Image (cartoon, rainbow, N blue to C red):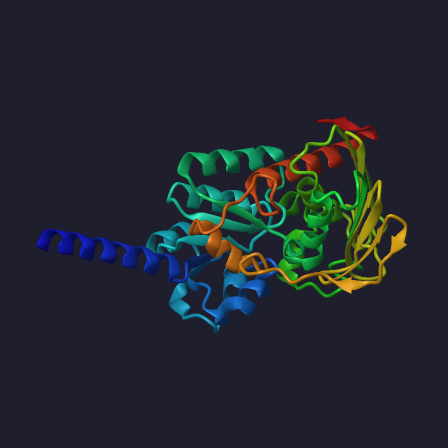
Length: 362
């Protein structure tokens, strides 16, 4: 009886320890501070979903002047990513550097068994994306790519309509993303230092906003790879953006479906909207909350999509659930590594197509 009691107590203690490890907020390290989306991290700091244990930024000026300064102790800021990782031992690292910067973050974190979340897109080249995938598999880490549109109620409701066949067979998807331009909307000097650099960003609007539509199409079509990619890239404002494109149209050919992705720094307004057309009707995703349907000839009124439940409603809640094994991620999911490796392959093909004027077969 005593042995059974001790065994039961030991089992309970083990379960309690496991539960505490799951419930404790992840220890997060920050790699780079030059990305304007750093505000996502700052806005979520107070919630208790994570604890920031260190910040690594090799640029002395950026390290001294960013929006995390004053919110964390001075000793938590490092010039070296490796030093921060070894001293602070984060469970997860979030990258807020350039898109090119993602590669060095993944290389440093993977061999230490540290999970990574990057801002969209995953990488500047397909070669880098494949290397990240190889490292993730070798060291057993998660690499999550974060898009604003992943957390839109409308996109997930639209996906459920497609999966249930309520629109019929989907034959066209048109995705619109962008704004008036990063300089025009007032992006800060750190953000602009790499966003308009073809090496650091991989391109201009084709990368910055083309990635959204490609990511969404890959998800809506359950990970299907397009047969061909054709793209037209324009420089409408060469005096403002002399090194990169500022307007991109990408045409993706699938079996029985055409996807048109329009990403631009030349829209007269901010937009992240999408039309999905099927044999029975269409859905218009106007923004994160509002949408409209037409099914079997009946035009519906504009309505609010159902709210997403936690942790599917927020990047940091999702990140915690992902790295703690509380949710199961499918390869075609919006944040998934497989989806985002394909996104980079398609974007690279789009850039190649624009240079040659010919469609690129995948």
